[in-house]
Image (cartoon, rainbow, N blue to C red; front, side):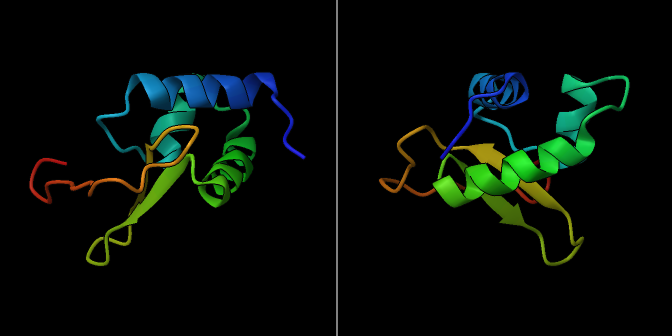
Length: 88
């Protein structure tokens, strides 16, 4: 069962509006909760959204950074998503 909480809705809205970018959890939390609250909630929400196929986890083996990108409510298996290693 999925609950549509205010934080979940704001997270999806942010990622959807910025679907051409990929963000770390720190960047997401900073933009959505500048006071630093709720970072652990974003970790849980993002893990769930990855499981649901709404967002994609992108790992960089060199830097060990993980970013997340919006794919859509129905997932996105119809084309390849690429990210420039130089500029992001």
